[in-house]
Image 1 (cartoon, rainbow, N blue to C red):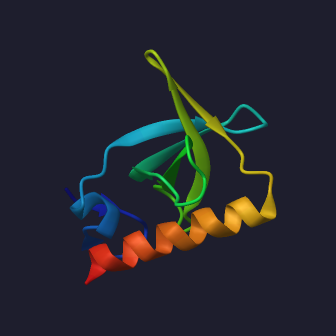
Image 2 (image 1 turned 180 degrees about the vertical axis):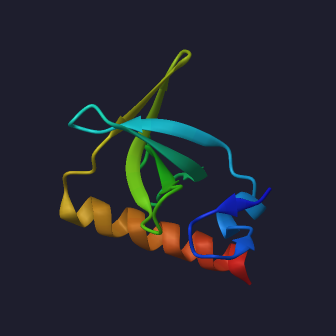
Length: 101
């Protein structure tokens, strides 16, 4: 699938080559951001919680959220605690780097 990004070249973007599942993230100002789902994972030492890594299709910045499923609904929560966020991001990078090798 080609994507025209006004750079003058017709090329495939990496996230499209991976064919990620996507979801829409509603931001505080009610705009929606389409994101590829990189994965849902658990973090050692943070039992009973799951986290999700999202990659906005128009950006290169990975977003990390606490992830909960309530029946058919998915609930994402901002990770407020700095120590918790550090553990989550370190786990994500460890998992992601293993996938890259």
